[in-house]
Structures are given as C-alpha cells and as structure tokens.
Image 1: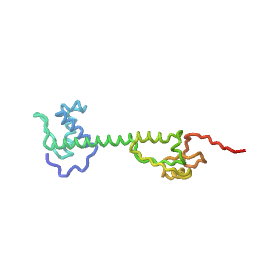
Image 2: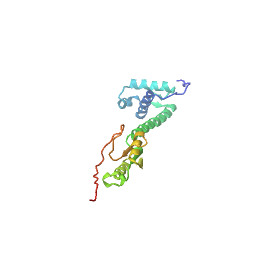
Image 3: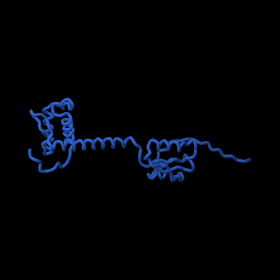
Image 4: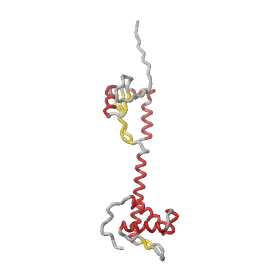
Length: 187
C-alpha cells in the first residue's frame, strides 16, 4: 500500500466509528476475537479495517494465515486513537457536567432591610444556593422598589423583592409573605 499524499484533512464521525472498531480489534488481538465484542462478523470487520486504512493512507495491521499483528504505523495510530477517544469521552463528561453544576452570577434587588427579616429566610436560601453551587456569584443591591422593578425589566437584575404595589406589565409577581401593619393614633 502506498502512502497517502495528503494528510487526513478532518476527522469525521465515520472515522471515529472506524477507530473505535480498530481499538476493539487491537485489544481483542484480531478480527475473530473481536466478532463477539463488536457484534459484527469477520468480513464486516475486515471491510471496516480496509476503509480505515484507505482513509488514513496507512497499512495498520498484518492479517492472514500467519495471524494478526500491528504494523509500526498501526501501533502509532492505535496510541493516537486511544488519546482521541479518551479526549472525546472527557469532553462528553465535562459538557454533561455543565448541566449538573450551578455557576454564573445571580443579581438580586431588595428593598429596605428584607435580608435581615427572620421570616424572609433570605440568608438561609442564599446559603443553600451557595452549598449547591459554590461557583455562583451572588450580588445583592438594596434599592428603591421602582429601581428593583426597572432592574428586573431591563435585565440588570435577575430577581427582585418589593412590597406589593401596582404590578408592572412584563413582570411576574409571586407572593413571598404577608405582613400586618397597624396605624396607631392617640385620642
């Protein structure tokens, strides 16, 4: 087999599939032993290996009556395939992990001293959030109710807590607690 004049321009999903089959063949020690592991016949494995050798422009293994053995290029391709497949698995694991970990910034707008009110339990909720997502950066701003609402509307705040007022269009209000206020007068 002659060497391919052009290097492999890109690695496709098909190439990765062929490299996984190649890895199994090498680790099993030949085509026959790989049949059960791969769940495909010897002729299909042979065709896949021919396709891989054609795509790479390299002879990867000796096969025939003398048995199965890797060429020097075959050993190097096997080592490179292990690195590539390991890197793909690491990538998959890390990307999937992004969905499991909270991170980023949470901007909260509050009025008055709501953080310190015991029945609000804001400090408890924030502590639990930090336990679940230590990489979350929490920014709390104490500002007037109108500024809280405007901040949520314009996106500079992710959430805000204000006393019940006339709701603004575009905001979703959820009740957190009720508070009784009394007016005292002297007679």
